Length: 273
Image 1 (cartoon, one colour):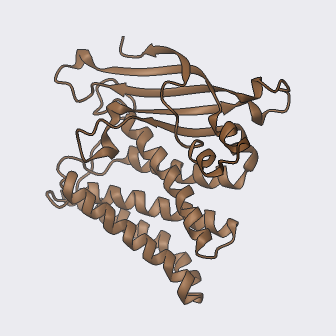
Image 2: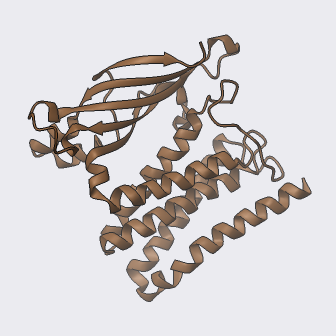
């Protein structure tokens, strides 16, 4: 435990170092700049409260846990790793919009949004180290980092976001309050949008998209024989483009991140069989 304790303290110091360099920038303008600090503190408080309610924060001395990646015998079959990536990506993008409302220019807003996502999601990992059920996961730390970097890349390079969406498909079961780990009802996918490629000139084809997705099922089942890891290739419709052309810009933005269920045809491969 002594070694794990030193590891956790090192991680915590790293997170603090990440936030210190841009705190002086906040302090230059007390009103709008401090709003970012408050947003991060509120976010950390929400994560801590959620972890105490659902993930047994504070029930263990700090420790690490090797969770593996996408293997058949891992806890969630890798769905949790994509969950960390997507949550970090979405959080960075969302905080960027919030920081723009605080008065930041686009470049600064996305930089601080991505940094805040990195800080908050990996603060969660520090919290996990104090949970007997969880433990600090290097795999989650890496996926959090990649997700935060992706939020920066997609916002900074418009051509990338014009061609590709990172989405989640989620149908809640309403059986648990801990919706963020309801992986049996989630799918994660990359949608490659025809409208982003100039060589596709047919106006009808430009509404199409190619989807590559992954999801797992029954990883909370008692027997391992029931577990499924599904990789799929699908063809769908770019509903964000349709919404945007009809003036529903907020809906169009939402559909860049959320996949409407039952709106695509897919070929699936169960990696467990």
